[in-house]
Length: 113
Length: 115
Image (cartoon, rainbow over all chains, first blue to last red; front, side):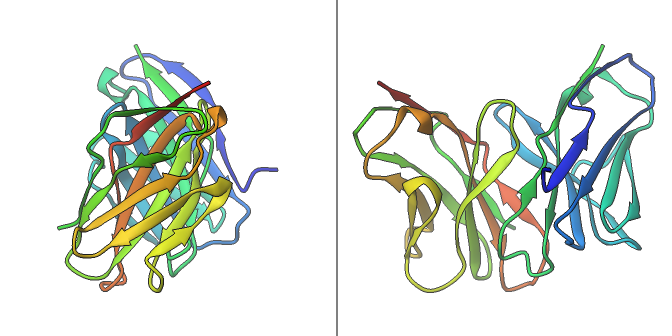
């Protein structure tokens, strides 16, 4: 099993719909992140969580919300999807020191039509 | 503020030749530097890191990177490229002094190795 599992892998949704992307990890790490990847822009941080009770906005949090249901689970929601949220979304986890880099999931490709 | 630049959108190299993927960074404190690789339809995979110590760090799949403090660079290198090295490569930086969380990723460089 993968260390970080994201579901679904692919999703097409309509403008205005609410959608949830799920992430679970088996690394036992406290820190979890949601990133968005767009061509030519690299990865941009949407939200991050240092533990179940600590959730913080990243650089592009508008239009998104998150829930940390447990140490191992961190979900991302688009409350009302819009076409410019079409992107590849990655969940990642790291240990508290963060000096060992991130472990990423395989990503969710989201298309908003 | 932290930033990282990968000046080349794409690097083309023949199989068997050495490769270099460039990265420069800006951070106010001590840099923690990372390279990741992304294969098609996959997440990013950690390749190597520099935290402290020797300027030349070795990582997975025969890759290495050289930390150059004066030039604020952390170029990724491999002595002999393989076709299977073709992928998207990301450089990332974090400010180690602040103990903060924020890792900034470059825009990525696509490496194409021709047989």
